[in-house]
Amino acid sequence: MAEIKIMRSDTDILRTFKTVNQLRPHLNQNDYIELINRLIQTNGYNLVAVIENEEVAAVAGYHITESLAWGKYFYVDDLITNELSRKKGYAQLLWDWLMHEAKKNECVQFHLDSGVHRFDAHRFYLKNGLNITCHHFQMEV
Image 1 (spheres, rainbow, N blue to C red):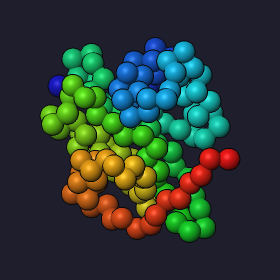
Image 2 (cartoon, one colour):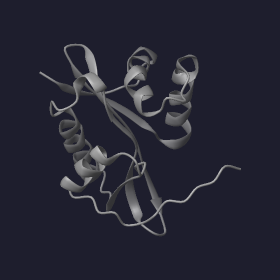
Image 3 (cartoon, one colour):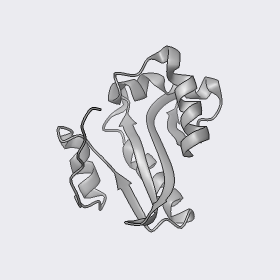
Image 4 (tube, one colour):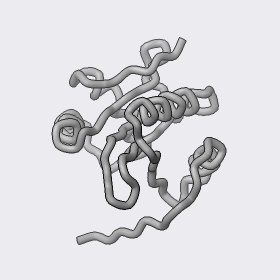
């Protein structure tokens, strides 16, 4: 049976790399543990995974923060199901856990950004009640 696990040890963090790298191919495995630990210490980042038969089936990274625009909110930085584990309900299991955490932490909003080309992810987000509420702009500096 699948379980949700908060990934805190270096060993657990490294276990998530192959799945996270499917979403974030620019990441380097040699720097991954240090990067995640820095995000945890400086940004309040949390890394969680769905584990099934000792394999990482899905991963999410999130933090809780506050802004003038949105109040206290839950922000999902990363959400990915391993390519080998898709269409098995792991994303929904992880989603439900994330929503529970947002409510438990008294967040008034739930946010994430998604690349414009990720149509399957968009269908999932819309099905689960998210609305498209803004455009996100960026540029290299």
